[in-house]
Length: 310
Image (cartoon, rainbow, N blue to C red; front, side, top):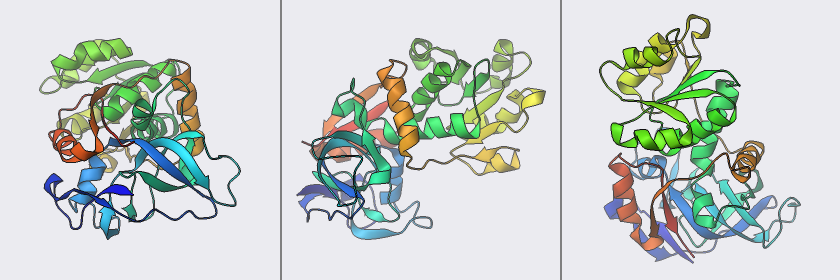
């Protein structure tokens, strides 16, 4: 089968399209004929060796954790899914080797579920990792509920745009930081936009004079260090960052994301109810993976970049 591989740590220039053996399917795994995958910063960070201290990589390695496609076969212990099912998932495994940038991928059953009926494969592929990051940090870590005022840093990005929509769906008032060119976009998602940079605390306090109830940081830097001053007195410590462990020294917690079918099914319900949409900034064929990575690495992407496979 055709797949993207890298044979050593490096940048987009080290990616190649080649033939590799089809993956094996364990008792509680499924084999998926891949239709689309999305590009996430973790993909090129892993390929660059930046996370080598955390996750073991076996070369040659196929990148990618997000997938949307059709179940081709299932292991003998699988009952929840069947061949022909249209699925999507966050296919994170214990080591880095057999990723989703391929014509077929073997996925543990715990990582995949039926995709939203109102999304095509290209849209669905953009959801799992970013959507789960937003959902798990907002719902489980920050416990956002109706009536809360929530501040989302980097609200126009891949994770941020999901976070805004999930918080709005919870009944929260959402303030989102973004560059001015993305303010109209945030308004369309239901957020109140504010600009990054000097004076951020004052700008947010104009909107929420007593402070906000919760902060989700997706960018780090000054936005993170400014965040404790933006929380109301009753909400001290209700701060999550997915970018920098410094958040723990500021009284908050370090967020993470993990495959969870129950959470992904909850996101599916929000999508099918029209409460979550996906903004695709670019769609490329798999053969243009290097261009897609270079664009994502530039750091100015609004929404998500997706690669089509079959």
